[in-house]
Image (cartoon, rainbow, N blue to C red; front, side, top):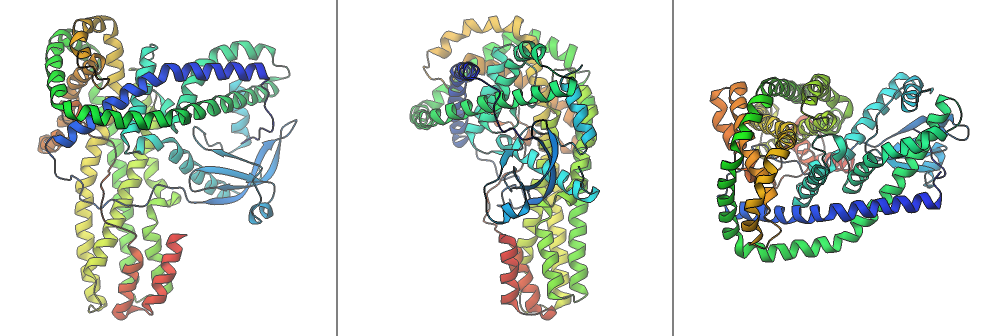
Length: 590
């Protein structure tokens, strides 16, 4: 971690970067507008179509994903020349890291010396690793092990939280933005898939432009840097930080300026699309049918020759990864419930029981505990990277983050479900043995719901990431042979006069449908024929019905464990309901 007190960019360089950002926004925003229109059409078509029953059985936790606030001393590389200096650092719940000269400055409410959001960071735990990184960038700490581990886990959680903010969003505009980024890059010949979409919308745009600027920046700047290898590397990182900050400021300002137009556009699209949605969907189906006949030959040839051979290995690797992670989640849940039951049977003190119930409710946000699950998601990252790289997929960090988000969400939903079901079944008339019997039944019900939801989540996760790996590759392979065939259909689509319907979008839907057939067939083999009905429910071949990664379902659930503890107290096991509830609630709120 290094401080950056001043910018090495002169006014001419800053103005040049501003022009680059303006050009990016000018070229990107038409893609974004088109995808916003497509998202409105997709949303309306789903509203008007058959309504499926809710698939999830667990209650959805209303607690937003967060990082546990963590604070303590760290060494920071800063100054001229740069030296490791002690700092007092605070990791906020939103994944923002602040640093102060001393603890007293933080405790007195002083402004931090600096702060950074953790998007795109990598955790290094030794000076040797940092120096190796500097050496790699430009060729030619005194903390205890326990404190270092705590910081590493906390920072890793913050990096993931900041990185997957768009992927976790349920807003149609977030998906439209990610689709627009992919289409923008494809228009510039970039069909590979990587981790560029980690971060907020402005951070993603910044990453896109930084990738475009980096080759020229490296060629123009590195030859002129003076000093030995590490001094040159330090100067290079200072320059990169300054360029990144300037681009990020410009992208943020541009997106803020676009926000009023976006709001008006979404409202106008809703008014214009809804009356004509049936006509638009019928036209889309007709064009898709004719287009399918045109591209089926080269598409099938591409799938047979390039995809079919590797699809089973990648599917099995994803399956093994997710199954191991979800098994770890179930084990942690079972262990947490066992601890509660032991305390209840043993007539433990109110303080012990209150602490254990609070810890159970906090399990999804405990970085040390959840690391057991997160390690399983990361274990096969290298193997997945090697397999998927054959198809231009380099987004394994995003994939691992997605698997870890899934584990955390399932854990949060399971904890919420257990505590609410317990709250419903426990009454003041039950003694301790009767309460234990009721909670055993609650455990069984929750684990059945967890098994059902985790099976569905596993299928949706694998399905979604197989599309992410293979779809851009197939589109890139067909670019030269199939794109020219679209011209004959463009007139029919343009006659509709709506940006929500484009020939490029219909073409991609056709390609996706063919690929989904292959994916569903492989999932049937991997998961077994007995699960095929569930696979087809979750992974429809209709592109606009494809399953989303993650578990999202609204429910009336809330933060239940204070009431649960209170009811256990009333059974005569412990003492004072009112005092105990108040104490636990304050701890939870904090």
